[in-house]
Amino acid sequence: MMRDDPAMIEALSALRLQLEWGADEALGEQPLDRLASASPPAAPAGGPVLPVPERAADPGPAPARGSAPSRAASLAPAAATTEALRAALAGFEECALRATATNLVFADGNPRAGLMLIGEAPGAEEDREGRPFVGRSGQLLDRMLASIGLDRTGFLITNLIPWRPPGNRNPTDAEVALCLPFLFRHIVLTRPRHLVLLGALATKAITGSARGIRQMRGRWVDVAIPGLDEPVPALPMYHPAYLLRTPGAKRDAWADLIALRRRLDAG
Ligand code: URA
Image (cartoon, rainbow, N blue to C red; front, side, top):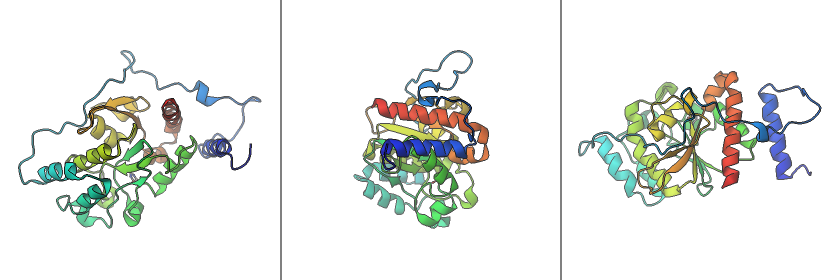
């Protein structure tokens, strides 16, 4: 294998990630194919949970006319292209987060890749650069994805919320609900074949499920997206910021990466 061989680059990335995650010693003479041996997360008590179609986040009662949610609900579906959607968001003054943010953080990566990753909201560095996942957790995510042969030409990445909440607080349910029509429209316009939901907030907002991220991670679920006829398979994973705080969760994250690679390889 040559050093610039894609298989070699992928193998080196996987090795680098293992080292970074603390696997710095070879315990056997023969290499083990972890891709072949990794198993999905254990099913919860009561039997395996099958990936059944789940409803996307409940829109609740119809928003009052002229209210911020009703503006979002009419503006977003009217955008015919992602550029128009970005412009609609840039002009959407009803979300208060816009006033305290430096930049709109819309998306990064390849809209034609067929894979869309959805995080929560920009942090300080994303706010400064106007690009999602460029800070510490984004760099970890990039290294994780490189270990399964993916870089930003192989996916599109965005957030539930396109503006940084002040002080990096979690976005409120109302802020998520307000921005969700724009995200749904973004999904409709790019039509990804697969979604990856990064963390509890994105998982709850997109699947509408009340189950926690620990139960949902690593299992594909079909999610209904308003505006699309077919449900989209989505894989909830831990958020990379959680992995930075919780080294013990990296084993599960590795299994989830393998689940993602397998599904992408299966087409
Ligand atoms: N965390 C997120 O969820 N999104 C970003 O863009 C950066 C950090």
